[in-house]
Structure formats: structure tokens, C-alpha cells
Length: 96
Image 1 (cartoon, rainbow, N blue to C red):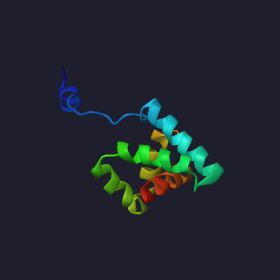
Image 2 (image 1 turned 180 degrees about the vertical axis):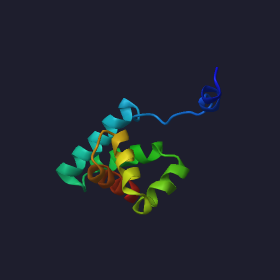
Image 3 (image 1 turned 60 degrees about the vertical axis):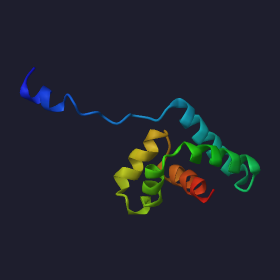
């Protein structure tokens, strides 16, 4: 093993996407918001999503306005979403 391979062998790359179940939940929230953002369905889905988020990630999400645009695009890409759609869903989940 050469020097370069040794130096990167312990580095873990972030995932290209979140799990399919999280993407599906995201899409359900997005759909519920489009139908009626005040519905019990939208609120229940958001609660379910928020319960999946660890406190450290929740804190980071609350500070996302300070993130560079590339970071917001990356976070949205994890959910196969546009940055605008991702931000709308995250904003709603934060309010729950």
C-alpha cells in the first residue's frame, strides 16, 4: 500500500444520500405541506422526522442560514430535493 492509500484509508466519506425511508418521509412531508401546512398529517409527519434528528444535527440545522450555498445544496441533495424544497421542509420540522 502506498503512502497516499495509507493516509486516506481511515477517512470515511459521507453518504451520497440518506436512507430511502428518510427520503420517503421527506417527500410525504413535502406533499402534506403542499396540500395543507396546517393539517394534522403534516404535523404528525414532521414530529416523526424531528424525532429522528439527533440534537447536534438539530442545532446545526437551526444555523443553516449561515451555511454557504454549496452546503445547503449538498444537504438538499441527500434528500434528492432542491435547496428551496429542503429548506421549506426543514423550516416546518423546526417549528414542531
